[in-house]
Length: 199
Image (cartoon, rainbow, N blue to C red; front, side, top):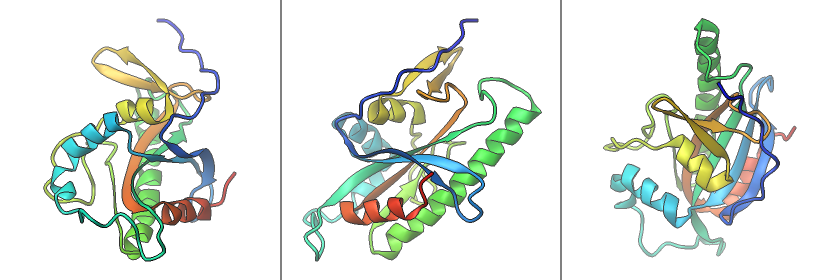
């Protein structure tokens, strides 16, 4: 099998508002997560529309700014965690590691989305196991995390059988991707992201 080499650092995509930063995860700060903030590129919006069609129908058509004249954006917030093992491998230790990373993300994403909704805006996140939205009702279309990371972060992937494997520029395939989406003022999203302590 051909070894997968780590990539050189990548330039931010045109959609990038905040480039990837590594942050400690609450509450005990024993784990970290890479997070960035992006506007929704047209190519990804088609995927978003497919997955969140019932949600989009309920977005206010005219509300593009809030009371502070801060532009309300439809944002993609990709996250990646550095796994302790190459997740392409198999075994009980790989499944245990996937469970650990899943629980890390679910805890973080619930906290993040709760903070967005407390400010009166919409947010949801994708279940990394099923590819389905976690909070929105009547959404049964699957979101592709790997495709999203390719569009938003210019990360590369390769095919292993019927699976598409993401490769992170620093971590190779020892990476666990998962995405949050939000419709909120850019300033609100920046403030929430930067409130998590950076490494």
